[in-house]
Image (cartoon, protein in one colour):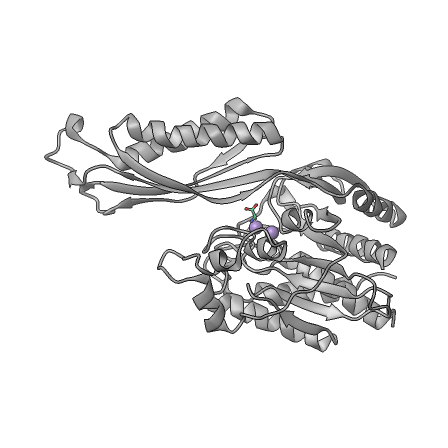
Length: 403
Ligand code: HGY
Ligand code: MN
Ligand code: MN
């Protein structure tokens, strides 16, 4: 049994057209926006067309359920996310959700009804681009955070998650148990493509920590304020960005640090910025080094302000500990890749995924396929059709062993 590659690709392309911007060549479906709603509506229609029962939970997670022959068996869940960053590629997240749907379509076509139910999940706000924390849907599903705390998360314009769920009509009341979870995803990194390997068997995911913060100095005239009198917050944030880069390089062992957002205020050409907000993202797989890195980042936030006599505030906006996936699931995926005659390699994920939180909840594993040039979170994100097909066949045959 094999999946239908053409059908999978055309579904990915159709979803990729939702929120598409011809000027940038990317698509944007930030969580709970109208574009995200359009993607959700399309996915739910496809799910119902395949005879799945569609259920929505309190944080807007979408579950498409295909009943098995033995209701006492715990479901096998395949999933990921369909929300995107800004100007995203068409594969991040979508490939895992539509790959799961393609498995369902293939089983329907072959009239196979396993004992276990199958669930295709699309988790809310995996990206965290509009609302923090990221991976909000899987965080809630794994019951790691109270619903109220997540519903009250606000975007830059002060709108809450709860208000947006109501506005787009995706606030539900449901939860499905799960026996095990498999997430199919593009690698979003350079290794598989560079080494010419078809399948990544993901053994774990590195830890992620996000901070949002702001420095407070003095707005002043750009022309008449002597340099020694200034309290320039943008310069302090710029130093913080470079110090964070130095920290990641000095910690080494794959540590990465990113300042993705910076906003000087009043943001006028001839005013010394009196306020400047920033974000920081630190990642590391080794538990101890991850803890050390987080401590050092917070020291840097304070020292870069103090050095210029600035006031500051900051908070942890998201955190996910490093995880190791279930050995049995990892070996299963490896055996199915071999069964299909596909070369594979074991690896750790640099990007975070919903599987990171599901893994504390049930046996979990991820399957990667190559990202051309290692590019992702940009319109240039690309994975060859054959690789997409291979990965989805590994998902299909892993599921067939589990049901
Ligand atoms: O940031 C991440 O690793 C994921 O793409 N949300
Ligand atoms: Mn993703
Ligand atoms: Mn992503």
